[in-house]
Image (cartoon, rainbow, N blue to C red):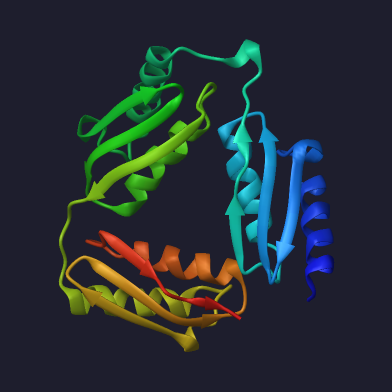
Length: 215
């Protein structure tokens, strides 16, 4: 697919996505890399834009340059955001709330602490990024559980084979301690994301180094 056709697909997908107001979003495409500029009304909308673009066939990468501009009536003080973030994390029974620390500066939320699984790390971020007033999120939660490297490698390889949206034949997995390396090639950005998700699903994974090429 050429860049002009891909740009049209991106614009149509953003117009189609109900959680996105596309009027203030600019799209440029070069060699399959999509650059997004302009502004959106919330951090949640910014994430929705990236998800929408990432599921389009032919997208090899995304350069996210969108700015979050909150309407005046939706701006929230940092202490209020922090209080709401702690409450919403506590409400999620899958997250060890006593091990998560929240700091907020100018609407930007930072999560610190240690959890047992990556899904808990992701759940904390997903809960917070929907809150009103959030301008951005840095997730510094770490996964503290350790596991045997051979067992982790086997679990990931099985997860890759189970993934319906992924052709795992061209992906290689390496594990050293809690660090996983993914290498090889896939046909779309969505497949690459599925491979990352499979790698993070194993216990004891602290870092996923993604070297997969989209071809």
